[in-house]
Length: 117
Image 1 (spheres, rainbow, N blue to C red):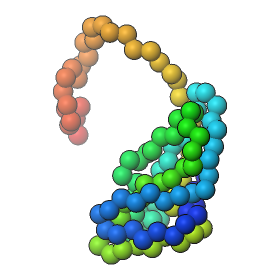
Image 2: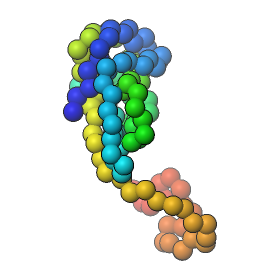
Image 3: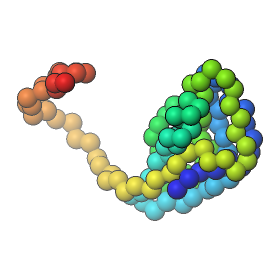
């Protein structure tokens, strides 16, 4: 779903800004909300989310505010009602970690770029 701003904001280049949506949700256990950039804002105005995808866990009850970042050269103005981000509700599995030895793999400890082109 699209998230809309409920307030105006001026996004100066290079300065992250929290923008309110006026929306609060209660997610059931095992679900998260993922907040993602809008492709149109990114392509046309270089507006993105620096923590994308942002995660809202099922225990959060406050207002959803979106961190927007202007990667462009000019200020960009957000108006009330503007679509500023997208939200996806997704299921996840809660796990418990156990300490132990790792199995061998073909890649091993190879880092960035080690799995081929």
